[in-house]
Amino acid sequence: MAIRKMICITCPRGCHLEVDTETLEVKGNTCPKGAEYGRNEITDPRRVLTSTVRLEGAPGACRLPVKTAGPIPKGLLFKAMDALNAVTVTAPVAVGQVVIHDLLGTGVDLVACKQF
Amino acid sequence: MSEYHDLIVVGGGPAGLAAACAAWEKGVKDILIIERDKELGGILNQCIHNGFGLTYFKEELTGPEYAGRFIKMLYDTGVTVRTDTMVLNISPDRRVQAVNTHDGFLDLKAGAIVLAMGCRERTRGAIGIPGDRPAGVLTAGAAQRYLNIEGYMVGKRVVILGSGDIGLIMARRMTLEGAKVLACVEVMPYSGGLNRNIVQCLNDFDIPLYLSHTITDIVGKNGRVEKVVVSEVDENRAPIPGTEMEFECDTVLLSVGLIPENELSRTAGIEINPRTNGPVVYENMETSLPGVFAAGNVVHVHDLVDFVTAESQRAGRAAADFLAGRSVSGDADLELACGDHVNYTVPRMLRLANIDKAVGVFFRVNKVMAAGTVRVTDAAGAEVAAFRRQHMAPGEMEQIQLPKVLLEKAAGPITISVEEASE
Image (cartoon, rainbow over all chains, first blue to last red; front, side, top):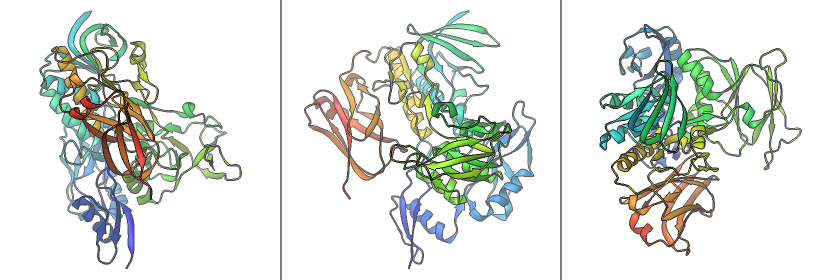
């Protein structure tokens, strides 16, 4: 049995976790989200990706901030960046509007974060 | 041209937006926000990463989303906004002079003022890095603006000096955009940023963090940064000869601290706390000038915008109370002093008449502690309150609530100190 030490990134509190890599038992968390984070870091680490995509038709602005609506597998972050670079959005755009549906087959949408 | 407003808010970032909305809700119907940028939202517009709003909105938002929610709230009020307008001077009789290309010179008068100018970054000049003066040395925030708003990559091989949150965030951002971030270099033995940002911005991308190290030379003979020399420092932060490492890079990003932007406050004669570089404030965020309030990063640099919002709402509501004659101005009943391991407190002075049930006090500790106890004692040495805490660090602002009933019993100035738990 091995214990992996990690810091939870779910919120700014940053709890120091100890996760058993076999039983997936989590210690040191102060909320249920921390336990979930600790387990996922062993089995399927995921991150929310934030970036920008090209924006047209909005005077004075050329980049639209975007995010994945949920976390995607950590290993797909750079592939996702390539997919974002191929996209151009034309104003008007609303917050939450889907920019890429089902990004890289993850089932997670890429959405706009700002209104233009 | 001269005009009057009940409340003038200087700055349209998260602090100004929250203060204006809170004052409006408390009955102030003549409010003007003056913002120097072309749009509202302040620095949140370029902070496209997530992690904002967990406390206030109970969900994780990006900077533009967080700002967008407050801008929408503001548009549902009758608050007037002047963007692209620069405040030039504030005088003690609450005159505000400003200029823009539409109205020209504006000579305004206010019943109350909220200062919400935020802060700006320390630059290379502020810390005196030796070496050449090539292009490619930028503050992390400037690089963030170029990349996230203007759409320019500022470099391909990057060394980051300072491990403040903006530097950490930019390490990840530049990496995702295809740059190679060679190192993050921090002069202190601990990081100034949030733990979660070290994990998700450095560790996730195998970017080394050199603690107790600094840049001792920047080399760039042909107009652009070519390499930097990094040295280990001793406990007095002096470079140790023989520890030099060289990094070939074209860009140096500086994340070496933020300074509250208080030129206007100083000219107005407002008392400044040398520990924070922000105005000394009372329990209701009123400055030493009656009717002039301050909130957000102009008072002290925050880690989380959620706390800026809470503090600014306090200022906005206090401005409304001041205008309605519901609050007392003038001398403090109790002063707050910093004891062991406490760098500063906000507020620093309390008037019990303005406190409803309890007052929130923000402070920072001066060292990393695994566990400790925050002790609040009065002049007689009697304990007013005590709070246990796990893991405290200078990079993470602490907050305690002091109940009014306990403060009423306290004798003389109150000292807030932190006692480290022995291992």
